Image (cartoon, rainbow, N blue to C red; front, side):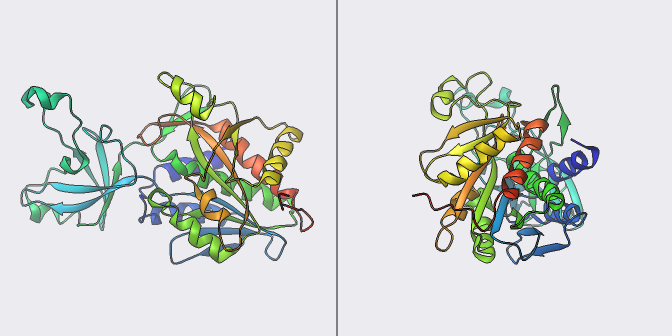
Length: 355
């Protein structure tokens, strides 16, 4: 991965943008898109759309969401502590004792998620997980008046974990679910800007996936694509404790290639085209199966209007919905390449009617 793309990924990962508050991620994504796409569109929901080859046929929508799980401030106590509500699906064991970044009106503020010391817990409390609504944030304020100079009710916050390099071209950080997908669709658009596709390509970074696939639903309605390819992360099953998950999700390994999903949420002809493209272009890939509608943007796109020929590419992800998700830069690059090369083969003659 070149330096520019790596810096773009790092900036995207380190933005503070939970569902409903995606504007930091959106600004970074749109700025990068302007480097090669002359047509950048935005909608009132917060979706960003970089268009390649306007006026081409058919219309293809590439979708990756750039929201993340996080919290919002729900109450500021007289003592200056912040009470919070979760945004998205949290494991309540994760936030306790973590540093957080709060996006206030005057900039970012720092805080910590407090917890009663184990020494002071009763025996029966020590083996119980503290519920999310019993956790609070301490910003060091002496009271409500001082706290309100920095933060307000409704301000978003995230765990303060940034982008880090690991061995073997792996990276770790918060929000790869699914800034990895938002990154990949724009990288695919960058490649397509040089491939001169026949189709009109809409690379879309969507909002509010973590609270119900909401951005993909509205974006797909507005774009009205003939073909859609969603990109998300999927559960890697290549680390300790995942032996049972292998039976359900298959063997999915970080660094072994993009995962091409098969199942009722997926158009079979588009699936075949992606597999054939991966083989011809020598792009590493894995296959997994989803036996029902997926919990991804592909779900919303497939059932848009009269129906869309939809595919789903997944990036293997270890430790999903934690501040230390791990993905491979090689898998990210392969995902973008497969999307771009697949789209370059689609014309108005390509038939996706399954039978």
